[in-house]
Length: 119
Image 1 (cartoon, rainbow, N blue to C red):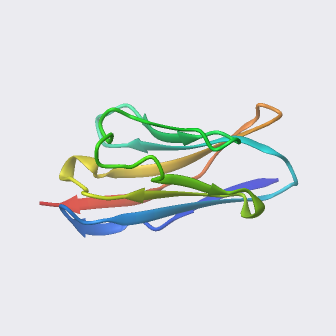
Image 2: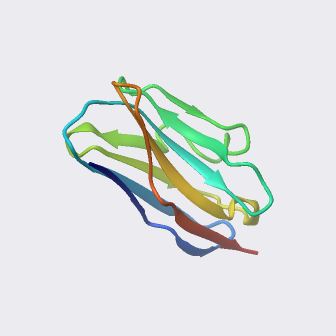
Image 3: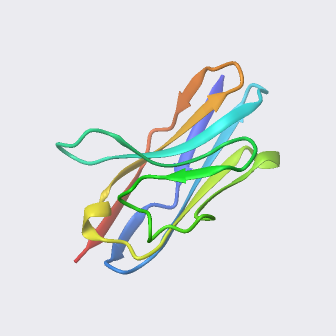
């Protein structure tokens, strides 16, 4: 059984930074892409950032300019993905979810970590 656990969320003032982590564990499998999504009340869950098995990254337009090309990173040996979030704004407040896509195309989600940005 695969477990996906996020950590690193919390309360931060506008302009501050947070680093989220997501670790996958359990049955041995190879990971393809690792993504961060976020969901806010009344809004559809949206993709924030993604990183491929080869290290290619992509970011949502809402975070480009604040998140650099290295904001999302992964440690394949640890099956872990990170998201460094800088210059946070109140509109970044959401539950941040990690999504793991295995090479088998099976998808695994974590339960999320709350990020709250105060103005």
